[in-house]
Image (cartoon, rainbow, N blue to C red; front, side, top):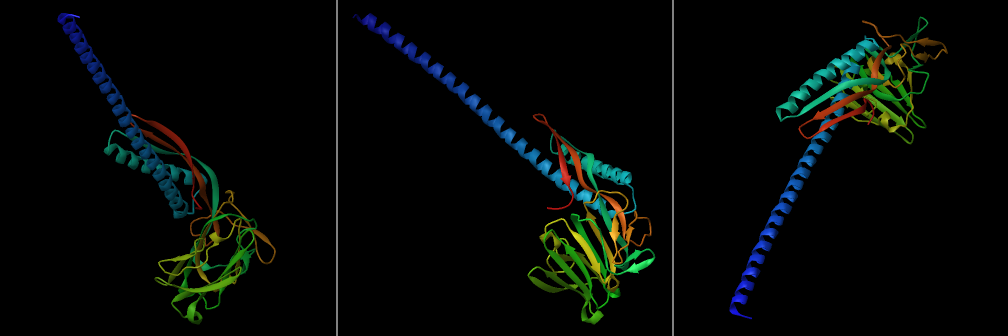
Length: 324
């Protein structure tokens, strides 16, 4: 082979090597670009998904809190007035959320009330008086809140200690298979500054003293604690529903109470007094001494919307106001 032939072959090899290098470099750029784009896109999707989850969680939590406040802020209203108030308050909340998300970027969110799935009942005594019940013109101290077994989502007792006796009043809550009795009376024979709470349950009994604030003690019987006091006791949430509630010696205590039960709203619930007669509560009216009835939202439904340049997300969620 001549030197000219060797030279030509070398040039061909050199040109081929350069071309191959260019092809490899080009493929490398393309592959890296694709991988970079996919990685960036996956990261954006991950961030967007996290924001949607946070928005959904916060909205459901806040709507539940709003519904709870609306349920207990007023008892003299109709079902239509209740739902109108709910829609108005949630619309205000949605407007605030939309402004907050818009300020952080090109995002739009909306929370709208769809419907009330369960309209339940609040049994309330919103004026200070004894825990008695008027039955056919007679006042009875031993009586039951409801004939039917119910679920209780809220049970708060506001005791006016200054007008409460040293003799106890008993509130007994019967669960599915067990019961808890709360014996309430003023300490030191009726002259003390504390509310004595003796809790009796299957297998035991505890006694605690709940300090008063301004002459009052606010008990949460569901969770088993006193607001503005460090005393705790066994709550009715430790029992399995459904429940019934009985009051004994209701004339020894004075104050207010507020129960939320899952009974469908019907403007009246039969209650059986100790004398065997059956009377009805009535819908609450201004100045009503109680007990009386008020409609509440037990479970509602909201529509949630989240939009951005990359996402258009809409969902419908149920919101249970009471329970865990």
